[in-house]
Image (cartoon, helix red, strand yellow):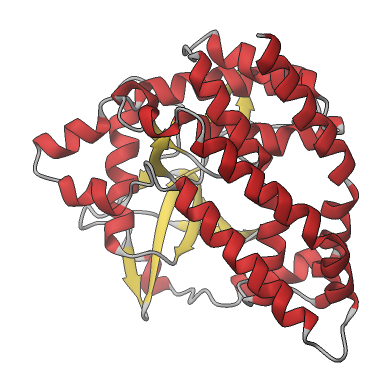
Length: 351
């Protein structure tokens, strides 16, 4: 745990905290406390979150526009606190900051079936509230905003790129005269994960993926980072925060994201994925061909690719021990994940 805290401190020390920054807001700051990679502000207007953001103005505008659109019919999402100029972002000493209202509640526990059910239903509501966003943007002359923040139809090519990258990692590591512990774990597990990548692409290419991307009611604003700490539970309802990775995409992409994160708490029990789909469908319909695409998405070993890409392409600045710990954990549940995928396939075949 100490190493995990250290990683977060690396982010926090890059903040340029100053009264001149806070003076740009109509707030009196009484105190501030670090929390993960943000600061909680105690102010005369209640608790707020100060966050340093690393994306450009286009992304900021997209997130603001999408949240405003969603909030018209679904108000359980994060809200920005605007500065004195009326902007949701503030530039200070070469960095960009935003302040958000704190959403009260407790972090979702995926190991709690009731909270997972609440989250699944709420995700259905969230997606439904974002329908029509693409046309809304185009009608107001913001087509470029959609184009730059849409991943619709790109998943198969993304997976092919990840497959190619992984093969390159394997080639590079194979040529190393001296391999470290991470390298050895990678080489012992890479082939079976390469197979899953290839299989995932094959499933998607033979599915209705290319038909779904043309159907407007299947395309939504996807959160894309449905981790437990981005979902707050209060009064039997789920609230969604941190839309940093949100994109316009097929709704099953978000369902895949939620299922992948949730089933780890249940040793990849297929019944839990079935529960997620059942609860989601209580608020938002799903068609049979969407389940086939979801199967292809789930087949891709995202966890394995993510950790290896972070390591070999130096995306993350984690300590070596953290990488090894994560890699071991992800490889240890390969068998359980394989059983889950077989159960999913059998259910599709029967259903």
